Length: 398
Image 1 (cartoon, rainbow, N blue to C red):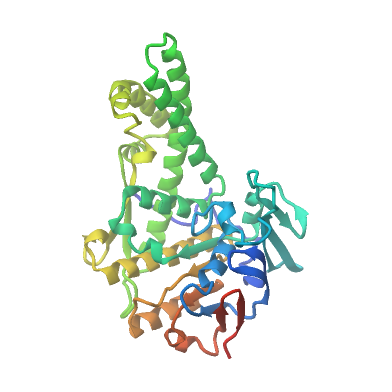
Image 2: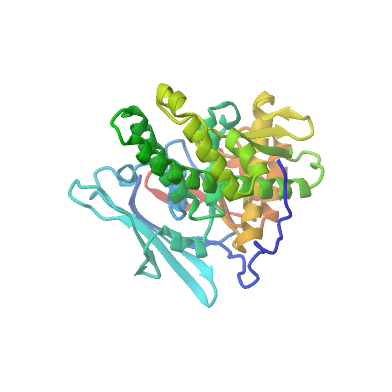
């Protein structure tokens, strides 16, 4: 994978923006296990401890809904509403901004069993979509469900990659969704071949597929290139630290993007689609395209695929990627993201936990950590806001 400098003429870090200090107040209503929660946030590091099932991850999920996408659980809206509640929910935060605090809120109203639609507000005024939040907040996260990323399916890694892209490019999700719809249309047309005029329809649909596919692949390539460059700039890993990752994209369309200008790549991909209609019809799906790409990750020092690393090394590689993503967001947007790390300390020895806390402190971002065992966060006492979570409630630990 070719890399490029982080600071270019086309994508400098916006000088007018300053990194925000994070959430200062969190309010929940009928969200998951919380009937009502109104909490002042007093520190740059927030630690939530409590028994499994107490509601720690629910808090992180609420914060993750303030960025494009479906949040860290990828849940349906109806699943976020509290059981035995009214059917809706609300999530609201106050963040530091120029001239004072800014309120961001999202949620759904009860709709009598009809489809739920999210609403968005900035300083209690309606906003057209969550895209408007991206001028004020970015969010990254790591959950236990992501631990098997390197040995899981290519689809899991594509979703992870698209989450990385979306944190930098708020329009990426819409392009991915539009590509999926266009591919479904092409697949239906391939099934119906023989109707007489399907070739004209296929030509039109494949033109749309090619345009969207190249845009999606190019956005992924740009993000991976910048992330790889930032990781390479980090230099040798420190004693007790986290291994550096080497990143690349693996797929026919990714090789096309690397070697061809965008318009030429579109023309070439349209030809690929046209030439493979028979094969794709037999398979029942489009075989070549961004929907078949994979994110390849290697342990840089060992020059080994991440999938061949130990479980602990895979976790450490994943943490390193998330921290690099946070640094890249700050460099590209000027906004220090919220960093949400669920059950982060469970699989690390004390030495690596200490290294993690040191790296988190250097990010300049607000970090939210969860874990069942308060002793895993002993080194953060006096530096973090320590909170005890019990079902439906949160209180100061000390």
